[in-house]
Length: 470
Figure 1 (cartoon, rainbow, N blue to C red):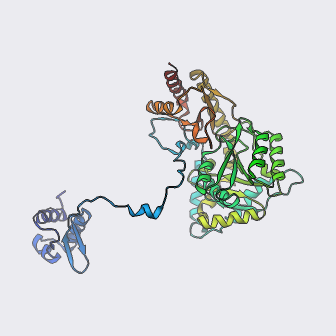
Figure 2 (figure 1 turned 120 degrees about the vertical axis):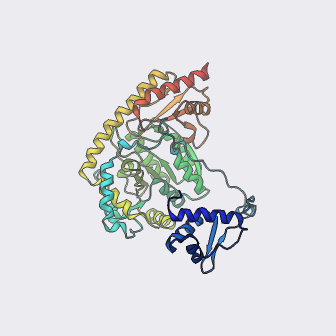
Figure 3 (figure 1 turned 60 degrees about the horizontal axis):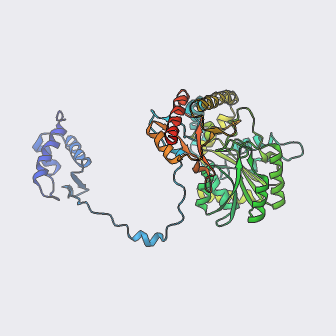
């Protein structure tokens, strides 16, 4: 480290500083130039090195001084106790689906598809094009890029039956991902302290968003075929709720896919009670053996507020979602969105639009369907072989997950810990229940990395279950 002149000066000054008291002024630059026979540039380089090491500090126009020793002391944040007041009701912690782990574990917990299931080439090309366009340096409109609004409206409108007016681009609000939109929707359409009906189990992110807004969650039992319509009717009548959050297609976590008859009954209940359905179409692009026909396509009376995310299917780096709402509800939601985030990054919107309008996007989705089917079936076979006491109540027709019922005597928390210690990460089903869990469940993602390790992961789950039984 002493091969150049500045290093020689640094070493010499370290000796000088060691013998000097805190606050002592170092010799002037002119003195150091003469003492070390070095140029002013070399002396300044040495002084910058000492500053970066924290042993001296410079005072412009005055000189350079030995830095005083900072004596460690405990922090006193007691004043914040009075400023913050009583602790609010605790909200759900970061879900296991968002935890990151080393690459050598078998990850069956994630809520996102593996990188090899993404249209990576399309995304990279779209970013390159967007960086050269106006979106890289301009602010987008509050409701979103007009072209992207039109795309979301056209996609939903294409599914509308004869006699139903399709949505218009002005019905669309673009959000920075669906999680942000859920908080805004719950605040705008429900409000703190008021009831929101939700399926039980349901998406953990919706539970978290509702808790943060202060909405009162009202669980409605839901299974492999969706919510019980009689229980839903009773919940509307009992609570006076004016909103119901649900995932009618490939629900997270159960994989439920509503029948046309159930969809008709839910729409009838919404009209009868003057209520909204907040339809979260999170898995629109993840159909395997069935396609998605949103309920929103069958409603032009403004009862269905439709949320369609591109984050999971395009790229986790492209956090873009479209919300379709008609009438005053849309204006109230837009006002809430502006208050929270003002507008969505134009470059992310441009990238999302570029990807989904490429001819190769449709080709990618066809291949994705085949890959998801192969992964789902591989994990199902592995569970049948290695975890015979587990039960998948319904094989999902789409989505990313299996909802696995375990024996009622299972200590799920212990099972999760034991599996993780053995290098297999799984998600406990309790996180998806807005009330007490009705059984012992795991949610396993078949779209995660390294599907070849699924059999080994299932073997570990089976072994840890057997230990509990023994």
